[in-house]
Amino acid sequence: MRKTWLIFSQAVTVALALLFVVATLKPEWLDRRPLASVVPVMPPPSGSTAPVMVSQVPGTAGLGFAPAAKKAAPAVVSVVTSKTAQRNPQSVDPWFRFFFGERGEPQPQGGIGSGVIVSADGYVLTNNHVIDGVDEIEVVVSDGRRTAARVIGSDPETDLAVLKIDLDKLPAITFGASDALQVGDAVLAIGNPFGVGQTVTSGIVSALGRNQLGINTFENFIQTDAAINPGNSGGALVDANGHLMGINTAIYSRSGGSMGIGFAIPSATARQVMDGLIRDGAVVRGWIGVEPRDLSAEIVETFKLPVREGVLITGVLQGGPASSAGLRPGDVVTRVAEQPVANTAQLLNAVAALRPGSRAPLQVQRGDQTLALTVVVAQRPRPLVRPR
Image 1 (tube, rainbow, N blue to C red):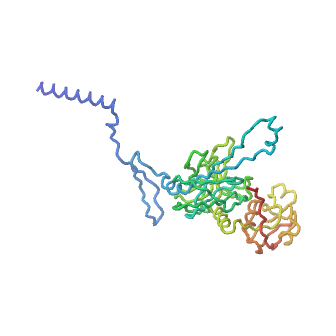
Image 2: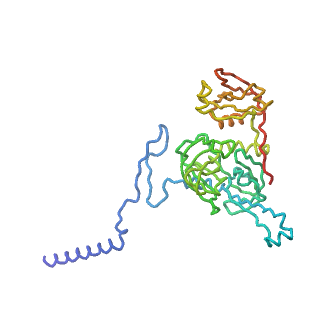
């Protein structure tokens, strides 16, 4: 009996020693966690077939945005531009060369932006400021193919442009319903920041309908905290399904890099502009010939106006549509075609959406009087475009 007990004691001692060595050198051998963990989620809406439990294996991909990025990223391209540097006309003057020496040939200037393939036949959406004033445009597709691009049309007032490339088997992005976006929705920004190559960043919709930023004439931006940097201009802002929600355009920055405030043109606006540029080479907008100003609380108090929202008209073009309709400086426009307007941006957008040649009702506050005027809409003059 004593011998048996001695053998048992020695076996236990050896086992404990082995356990100590393994725990010290190979602790993962002792990890007995379950292979899967179950995470409860909120019950789905009534009638939905969505699962109520989610199983996830540690170390594998979770509920991320990989499917959305995989769907949208192939349609996002790099836009490489170059501009021939202007030669100094005095460089041929011998006296100039005597004093300043041989300066050699001027070097071309280049830039990098992004774009989005919107159709399999090669139409590409980008920002006007990416291609404005350049001499050559090259598009680099996500599969590495490079080709020259030509400008179909540009719209400086929304900072959008459409390019055309001639390649086969092009992936095209799917347009989403940007009007259905809500603050807090998850979004991805895809582009070529700083020329490092295609990059995907994530964030949420921080705000909607941002305007009066002084970036474009017509502003209705989606604000996002997804990292957008120089080079992302013209790239895609997509939702969790990989659908195009906006064209990344601008950032608020004191350093030149992302500070968590970026702006994108809604896909609804981008599609409308794109269709006009492809069809007509320009965007046709309504125009009535007025100088508007936001209605401030001080103006309301000074003139004892009975309205708190509207747009003050400070000038009316003589002989223009608004003048012919009876609109006067000092009037406050509160509605355009039955649509309320509370600021200058809303007035510009509402008038621009009117068809040239059509008749549109205006609701106007003139002192204590509320007037109903009818204006015959004209076509908005095209902005001056700098020569290429």
